[in-house]
Image 1 (cartoon, helix red, strand yellow):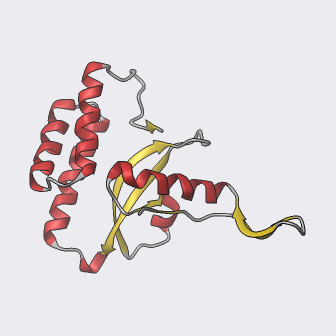
Image 2: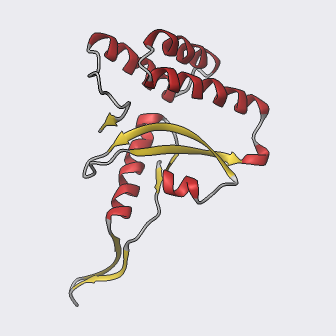
Length: 157
């Protein structure tokens, strides 16, 4: 099961004619939440939140998963995995996040060799992580078919 959480303006209420009528929610913010939900399996996480949600919950610690362009949107979206309350996060997880942030920075700067080493080290420490495998696979693909000069690190779904 996956959950996608987004916040924003939306229309909520009874929609339709008198027959049939349904209580529903509509709008771009809802559509993005739905897209985030469908991405959970790609990253091996249970919950993905948008940057808007992350910014509205400063007491939570998040792992940035990716910057993506989802179906129906031209503008890239940064997506996050909630990890827990900031005050309750273990030192081990904080250390893992520091290594991960460094690997992600190397990846986005097209430093395939160093980023791959970092992701392989992270994967060795956490062999069940789908996320680290995602980036290792992408690095291999970028070596075969290098991204354009103006590549912005965004992954298009």
